[in-house]
Amino acid sequence: MIIEPGSYLFSKIECRDYDILLPFSCRKTGQCCSVYVPRIPYEHLEILSQYLGLKADAFIADYQFYYGKKLKGQAVRCPFLDDQNLCQIYHHTLRPWVCYLFPFSYGGEVIPSCPAHVEHRQLLDCLVAGGKEYNVYDSGFCPNLELRPIPEDRWLGILKRFQSAPSLPELAVSFVAFNEP
Ligand code: SF4
Ligand code: SF4
Image (tube, rainbow, N blue to C red; front, side, top):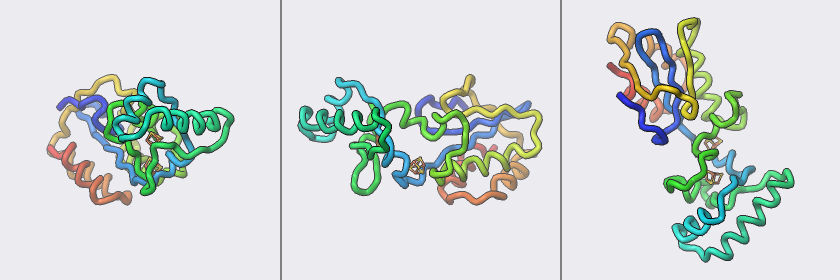
């Protein structure tokens, strides 16, 4: 199986003969976006304002105001975050890569304010427990997007390790969908 670049966030655990894919599942708290404004080029802002049905001039002026505060070191809410704490351009191809790659864009340190990242790291620790034979890659840094299937005789042990840490039901479903032989 080939992992589609840009399709979702994941960690890939490379073992000697097979790979384990751990998808990242955002809990949509909006926490990260309520203290950050990404840099977005002017021409992208024009397209995005059109996409949102907003007047480009007013929206861009608004964005520049908030981005200017961010440049001064202030924690500013992103103007693309809506009242339900959801990103209004989440499914648009012009959503910045820094957003797409969060929380993996922070050099591998676990981010305590992101509950999904804390959960992800706990699961990762369970899956690589005791593993000298492992390499672990995150979405943006994975050199080989081909996924080697897990042998049947290893699957139940891996599933047990996954189940030894708490996870959301939808994450368990996608973990099985990606990895079950
Ligand atoms: S563009 Fe979307 S994902 Fe990026 S910081 Fe703003 S609200 Fe969050
Ligand atoms: S802080 Fe984490 S869980 Fe919350 S929206 Fe951001 S990435 Fe998702």
